[in-house]
Length: 146
Ligand SMILES: [Cu+2]
Image 1: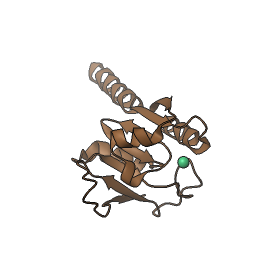
Image 2: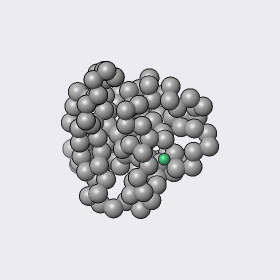
Image 3: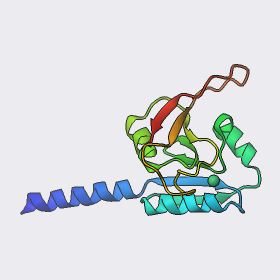
């Protein structure tokens, strides 16, 4: 009886920890699809702080996502998440903890969350390199396909 109670508490704690992943979304105040992405993250259990910015170029420079820019820029667990990235890719990132700056879906693809209906297995997510040297542009490396 006591053991099952402790197990129940641990399960509850684990669930609460999972549900409470904080995310900060930087977006332009007039961006509709950025707001859709905020709603998407909230529905997936993230606790979102949305920050409106009139200098999204500056935000992307600061968080290292200029080379694969989309509309909004999100910070989760010390990583930069650029654009309409599916939570499946974010979960992989947080679980594997690779030594990269973050991940990105450049532009605003119609098959991404917050844009249009997702089409499983069609959306390419790229790595944001940890040390970006603008004088030596490299081809973006694929992180996953969601
Ligand atoms: Cu967008």
